[in-house]
Amino acid sequence: MIPSDGAVKLAKEWFKKEIPADLLVRFNPREIVHAHSYGGLSKFFKGLTEGALLGTKCWNCGGPEGNIWLPPRVHCPTCWREMTWMTIDPTGAEIYSHSTTNLPGAGFKGTVPCPLISLKIPKVWTWPMSYLSKFAEDEPYIGMPVKPVFRKKIPTYTILDLAWVPID
Amino acid sequence: MITFGKGNLRVPKLSRDVYIVAAGMTDFRKFYPEKQTVELCLEAIRMAVVDGLGMEPKKFKEEVNFAEHSQFADHFGDQLLAAAKNHDYLGFDPIGNCEVKTGGATGGTAVLEAIKDVASGYASCVPVIGWERMDEVNTRQGIDYIASAACKDFEYPLGNGYTTYYGLPMQRYLHENKPLRETLAKIAQKNHHYARFSPYSQSPGDYTIEQILKSNVVSDPLTFLECCVMSTGAASVIVADKETAFRLTDKPVRVLGMGAGSHTLRTADRINMPILLLPNETPEMYKDWIKKDWPGFISFLAARFAAWQAYHMAGIHNPIRELDLLETHDAFTVSDIITYEDIGLRPYGRGAEFIESGEAYLESDLPPERKLPTNLSGGLIGTMHSVGATGIFQVAEIFWQIRNEWEKFHADEKYWKKYGKTKPEDFKSLQVPDATRGMAISHAGTGSHVTALILERGW
Image 1: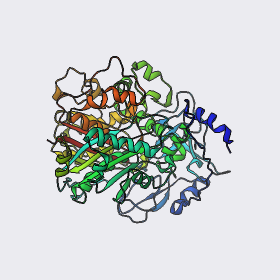
Image 2 (image 1 turned 180 degrees about the vertical axis):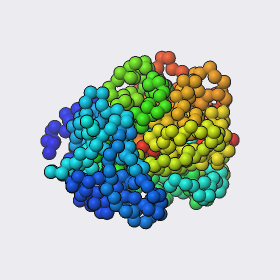
Image 3 (image 1 turned 30 degrees about the vertical axis):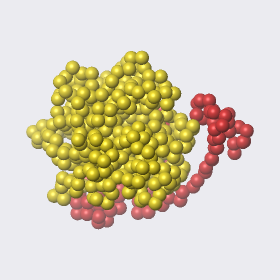
Image 4 (image 1 turned 90 degrees about the vertical axis):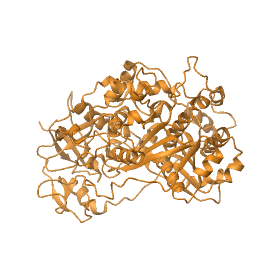
């Protein structure tokens, strides 16, 4: 992939300094595919492609009202029993915190700027992480009302199939 | 876990006294193609044995009966079972060894594991060697590898970088506690400054607050100069029982207290619970806390739990008064200010006071009992974050301070020359006068693992 006579020049560019002539640097390329199963969480990722936000609730430990896990877990971390799947009503969701990166890692699939947000959703006792796909000047801000949008047509079958936009 | 049972809050106890007897490290660089990982590890342990103990490596190895190796990510060095390669390269075979992995706290955990090895009676002399080879991939790929420590299903695809994951707590911290933005920048200023006096440091410099706040924003509000460096290098300490310790050195440093905490890998999953109080806290201090979420995004339960264990084990009731120096895992300025609160230097919400009061500075005019110089090593922002080495590097710096050897290992021209550096003309000593006790906090992810280790003069 990298011509042998190009390695010395490339090494100098890579390490941003003069490389001693007797130092040998080899470039090892790699391309890998993992077949990753969502297992018991498949229901959640399928739900996104159908426009549904699914969480889980433990009736044994989570009390009579609210306390839904999102991200969902198949099992309750307290009593290890299987939890109950339920559809979450996102009405009243707001931004709990946010940060927008200028320097994402190499695996980033979005475009910059792409605000990372944490959400506060009624009846959910976690602060799920997602992203804001539409925003205006001076947005996002803490407390900003938002609603979910789903990538139903050409889903990626990842958490990126869910995004949030301002209410109005 | 939200409610604690009796067993959860048992105060840890070692079955016998354990000591640190020597420490060593390499310098830390963004790129270190001149040396392979095993060469760097050999240099770090050789420094501990030869410069520290004044022993021939061959004689030292006759003492060793277990070893702990510490590397955060196999991805970076592209070598699974790198510990076996390292152990072999150092000539320790067939002595048993273990490779520790707890994210950014890997180094701290490796030291704790070595202490347990010795305290249990299984071993009497355990070298701990940590490293990270972060220069084989470019910075963006490096950020991606580190980000793959976040939940791959729900969080990694979104943020793709720990600076962004820490940007969330920072926005929330600024919103809830309203510190001056400048106070956070002062943490970066302090640590870059102290790094100027370390021959091992990667990012030394004197910066104005304006320069720090106006440097490029990595992920808002965190700027480039408020973030840790990405390093290649190694660090080492040697852990021993009492008999071995006093045979190898006149001035061993004793383990007084230690703790290890954990919390959900996903920051999303940190549901509310009552605040776990430290020995220096009362419920009255938090009577208004109902308005805020805890641990939420503005606290690390893992750090609180680790400090709770370590303080109870060490019998510490007032950390600022009873400790002489502190090394925190200042990966980002915001994680540092939160840590001050998690370990009880100030009540929750008031971490800024620890910086603004001058307590965190060696140079402060405050009396010694009212200050706790923090990250005189330069920390992760100024000196290094070669992840598997980091927690060990912290312990090494505290070890030297307690032995009154900071100058021996920082002021000596031979170390500056060794790394091709020039000692600053305005060099000053960062030795804490009469340092007796120090604490190191090693921290992973967004607080998924945290260790606390309290050391004191053992002679």
